[in-house]
Length: 365
Ligand SMILES: Cc1cc2nc3c(=O)[nH]c(=O)nc-3n(C[C@H](O)[C@H](O)[C@H](O)COP(=O)(O)O)c2cc1C
Image (cartoon, rainbow, N blue to C red; front, side, top):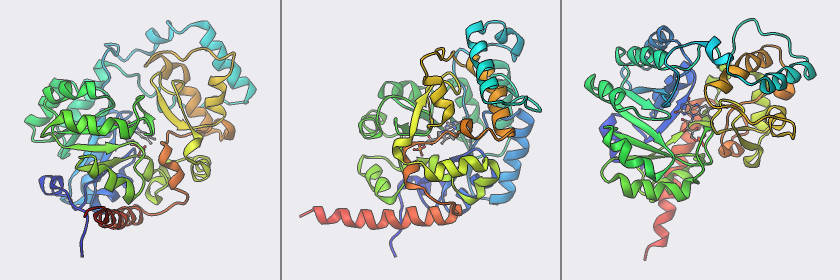
């Protein structure tokens, strides 16, 4: 029986060219165990947590390959200093957040939120990278920015390196940094995303990347999308939104988010800078609408916006403030309407890809 395969499968030792990004250990391990390549989003984890969690994934996948992703944006402050950043936040922004807290009756959180556990800084990025380099993880993925020194360190330890990019202009810089695989991530994608649509982006990146393999991200939800990705010259796909409604991920997700994601169609996501300071696609909720309102201030740059809203975001989930609870998600969320195991999602993607690839041959004569 035919199955889905591209050369990158043999190169990396995986069954299917389907890469899955997730923020939790169980989902990542399930993706690798289902024949794909699971990648752990560790950018909000302390270095010692990264070491522990990569070991946990390793224990769950046996010898199967898996990766880790860090977001290493340029121009972050040198030190992990919340006070220094807080001192620079304009009073107008603080007042807006205070007003949200009052109007929605949000009690204080028991601790900092996910975005304020630590503040992005060069100091913490260096320590996170060290934890990655010293682990046995097979792949190091760069979410935003691919610093050449980080890529070189990972390669020196025998790791495959990968970078997500959203513009053809970034191809040469990424290849020059020594990256082995490029993910071309289009506008449809969940969380941080750029302005160019997946269809417009991918063939340009494939063309410019030459021999460097390209994966397609942003809007991939079915085997038809996978067949289209291969038709555009890519060697595989990279999905994030698809796993949000996996059974394995539910322990990591507020139940209100599960409900909102099940109900959301492709038209129900928005891009907002209110989450992190950079353009971020999420399901439209009271949160995004408040920041779009006439009296809302313009969100601050990263990491100032993180500091401004991080504690509140944590408190919103901790105290079940339903209208403001939200999740990052891409336009492909419209294809996912129930909670299913990762294995079922993977089987469906592979089965549909084979059908779609077979169907394409009818157009040849
Ligand atoms: C909730 C969520 C959080 C994400 N966080 C990160 C991240 O920390 N680092 C990263 O490189 N990509 C992140 N992504 C993007 C994914 O890696 C992937 O490129 C994207 O989800 C692919 O498009 P899709 O959402 O249409 O599947 C995130 C995606 C989602 C949905």
